[in-house]
Image 1: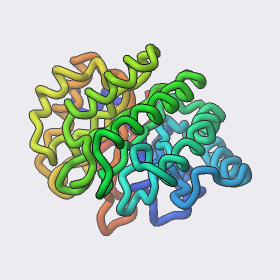
Image 2: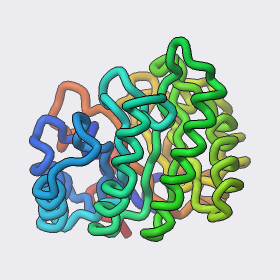
Image 3: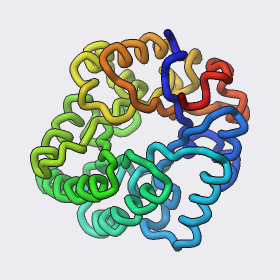
Image 4: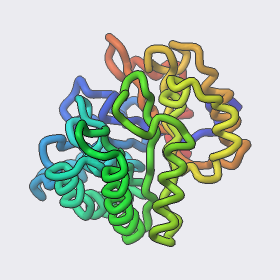
Length: 279
């Protein structure tokens, strides 16, 4: 088993960043991949010009790469922010302005998973107020995702790197997933299970897989320590993905790791080329 029976995709917001955005799909394709994912590419605006959206669609189409995951607007990411939807005021407004833009773009390229990062705690704001706002915005996002036949993803990050982010365990993220599904009745909110983040939190990864695979809509991996490619750290990623597969997970596995000092194309030697194209 190992890596042979997985559907891998490349995160173009952390890999191939040595290239301009519109050149990354072709670079991923040249490395043998047929599926990709993205954080929201326009960190300055939730509502980019139509020409920018069209150019990204063309780059994906021309490369023959399928977009399988897209983040909603999340503030300055990479950077200090970890999402916008629970941040009162302008950031929440920007998230709402982005919901249909992101969903419509996802629909235009056949993307079926939209990730909504929760956002950091804000000084002077009652966490309960943030959580109430978050649920309102996640309900709107879940309905937009449902409109295009997609799932809404809720991700747990790790506390060492994201100390102000409230969802820093699998149970915390699952609780939000359940609240959204209860509020909408749609059942399309799912857990984004990131093995790197959960391992950074010291969670029992075998237990997480056993408990939550049935509510998992997407998986991401990087090794730990270092957030590098598989084999650069101590995680048994092949074994963990085997466990996920045996627990019933058949979805995408996003490669969300750092290539380090070398070109991204050289960071895939752990994965034989025939196994890179989505099966």
